[in-house]
Image 1 (cartoon, one colour):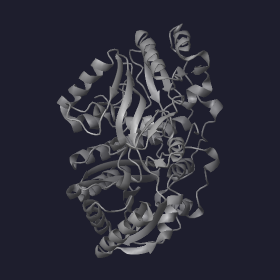
Image 2: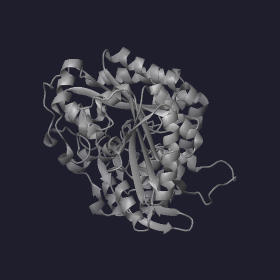
Image 3: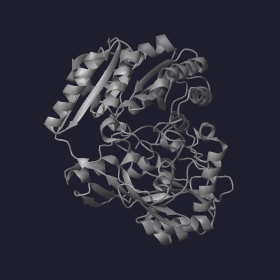
Image 4: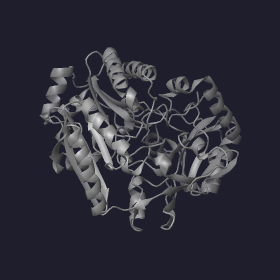
Length: 521
């Protein structure tokens, strides 16, 4: 993973000429006056770890698995939000951990937490480093130091049960590794978020991830049948049946807890037979309202596509649904992508049924090309974000969700808030996750960088968050809370909800070492 951007540096691409013209003419974007810092120019603070702590950690995981060199510290600094990248591009490594620890087993994680609790060292669980909500920056206040707990060595497929359709997998597995291992058993998770190439299974669970095929396979938290969790107080082993009436489901306490309550060391996940056929196609609707009405019909009939997403008029016009062709689109209306995965007979049945519903709702089938173009570029948008930043644009995403009846109000409220804060930005939106009762909205915002781009985006994000809450949306559908959404999350759950979270935190993590400053109001 590139330390100051997304993914593989070899996949970075220059912006097409039409996009550069659009940025300059429509938004006033200009090349940055100061070039981005090089790796060697990143400024790090001196380590504050007490003498002997590195020795104690090395005694647990082995000396080769405790790193305090600049390379390791920089590559474990922050996540991949636009504010994170702006700071890294400015050479600001002030949030770097003092050391990186790589445990190789559940017991080693438990012992590392014991050492850190005894010496007041904060611990940031680290998977793929893909957080976009400030989830990898620990508060140092009251702590002797900070370590990143990198789970990369916990990367096994422990078992696959084709009878129960359950696979036990370790949290450090990146999604492509997990799919490759499952493919050997004819299985798949079916979880393909935009962060797929780099994110880990543990991160998916800790942030309640939702993949691009959620219409067919469900969200990641729906896939978690059981888990093992290391906490400073000991081990939790949760989930022993498909469903249970044995009290509240404690899995839900850990799912979405973002490393603040414990460290997931094993996951028992529901899996699916690997599909033999994947078909993607495009549809055009005259407007966003007509397109979302069609999506609602498919979601409520429960026989729809595996992948279902709809770009609004602006996103369709710009061509963001097909990043490789950005700026070359002349399409009007709203582009919908529908994808079907499974066995040929099942795919044909669902495709025919969905096509009938979409046509009756006013959709026009565009054939396979738009769907296949989306599938080819489905993981490339973060690279585009990096290119836009390099060109002098502020570009960021935010997402929310609500019930169907409130979706138009929420859509308008967020767009209005972003425009009011940023002046004349380019605001695009798509629906990418649908349910019988509602859907998500995913916004992409592009504007010219102000002299203080961090302050510029902070003000816009605050305005958008306030608008989301007023309009009845949730502050996050799948990115999580982190530090960036913590204040809005406190409003969403109320004072009593905050007290409950703090009570759980105090019981599982009495010294407060786990990801301090994240999630908990």
